[in-house]
Length: 383
Ligand code: MTE
Ligand code: MO
Image 1 (cartoon, rainbow, N blue to C red):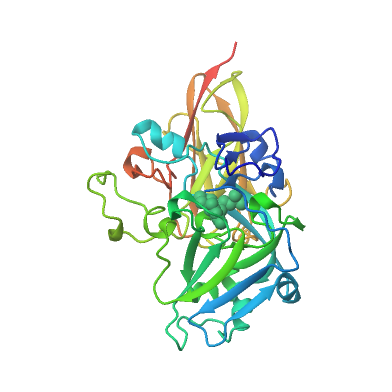
Image 2 (image 1 turned 45 degrees about the vertical axis):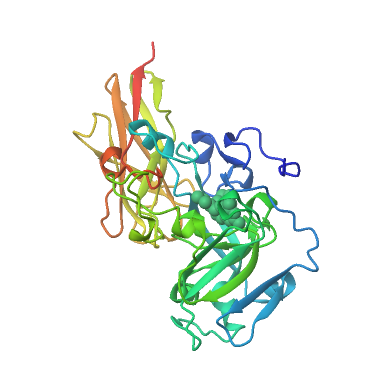
């Protein structure tokens, strides 16, 4: 097989697919820290992990609709101002297994942990693009470039053995406030092979699929990337669309992540002693929208209490500027009285007052993406 040089991985990861390697941490491990340790950060791949071993000769080319294409070495990139951005990366397929239970969907199954929160260190894409004469906040180049395509060195089936690729609009790429990074560090360590060594893109607030790992080339193009993962995948279709009537061109590639949350202190069905229990989990939204509120119900949604939220330390922090890391999740916690057998629900509200949809059937889609429905778990009385 092509999978004989995979890196070592933490044995606690739950493997959803071996080749390509797709795995997530157990729920409780996921929320044990605000910054997710690299070992416990979900791994989402579409092919074997490539090996970039000659770092001296590694170059990222920047070309396409630019006047003077360039090649950047890692030391060229490290010379640019370094930024540390705390951002949650979430796969669009997070919580797919639960969506599949209402009606079958196509795709790798995931529980609720296909996401992680890391401190990404690297150069801002807006600074990098200035090196080819594209200034900040440019939305179209003189040569007609409107999109920035990221092309990897990996090889995947979906691209017929070609590299993984994706694009974002030029206006986002050249906006320093959008914090799009070419990252070479994760949590202060050199980025490891699983997460894109030596260099990956991090597009905060956007589905993980656009954060291309093992970057090879940045291509300035007129139309958005025509690759498989932009045009034939990662699009949100209505429940009426099936594999017989699908027309991919009718939908835009998904970019921003909608508001999401999940309980991680309990399994889908869990046995607890009657009395007070702690309901804890994460909440996160896309586009830099913070989390305004997390509501918890222990009676199937009849009544609600508000959870405490925090970022960084363990202290609850609920002032106006609580989303000090605007691209990052918040962890939440509520101590609730369990009446007996019960359905425990969490739902989040973001800073734009977006609320999660109540039922998964209403947002069912054939690729099983963006299951952001209210997160429901069942508790039973333990004797
Ligand atoms: N980049 C490349 N080159 N190849 C890939 O398969 N997967 C994407 C994205 N970037 C992928 C990629 C998807 S779908 C997600 S969710 C994230 O990487 C996962 O990043 P992680 O493995 O670092 O968690
Ligand atoms: Mo993903």
